[in-house]
Image (cartoon, rainbow, N blue to C red; front, side, top):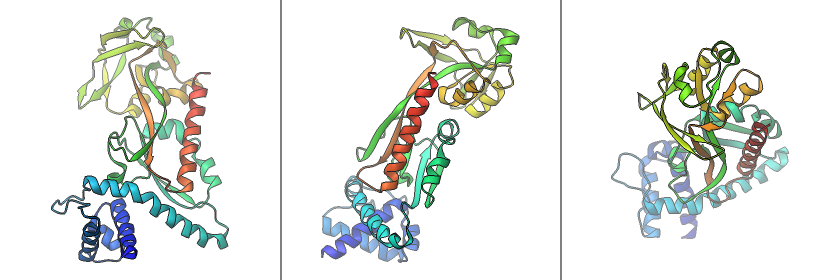
Length: 308
């Protein structure tokens, strides 16, 4: 009995990570009917349903999420141990594919400059990177191993490591300062050419500036001449020297170091949020832990460097 419970648990974990019954059956060389029967067999043994069988969309029940969180790490550990034994003869150390979801700005401005050193150290590892902000989404449903999010996840069955805080601040190209001068106060911004954000297809005009030295908040309306829903587009236009823009500090960091952007009203931030590194609970693999520590170290180096 324990043998088939173990086999069915392993099957269930793989099904959850694939996220689709038909696709899972194909990948596991089973018929769809057999896969569903195995899941129902496991449910009968455990005494409760693991998935919602009547739904067209694959979705876990509360108990299903709990079982996955409880057993996934054990299954991954066992699989990795077996793979490690097989790899001894080949002299391999770490291997596999790690699926990572993160905001594009984080990748371009912080992580991309350092990834090569991680991959050089682990030549048998591949990173599958998706540019997306998961927010409060579930790692299980999105089929990722790690994610960098700007808000805490709803699930308690994940591990969370805070990387640091991000601030949106004002910047301009040095050429802009030469041509038009720099605003000396928040109120002065409306005397200048500014770029603003589109939020839900509407201009985001009402802003709240926080003085980072005194914590005093000032509400104001920014009458921008251009609005974008893309920070990359805002950055490209600002680099021409014709507009002031407000951006995440991390996105402007490398351009500041090159002298291509100058911070305007440096004591103010118009928005702030925290960055979190989210991973599955339990020990999944040694290489995932190494990547987590690597990302944490890269972010700490960025935090130390940005204040120089």
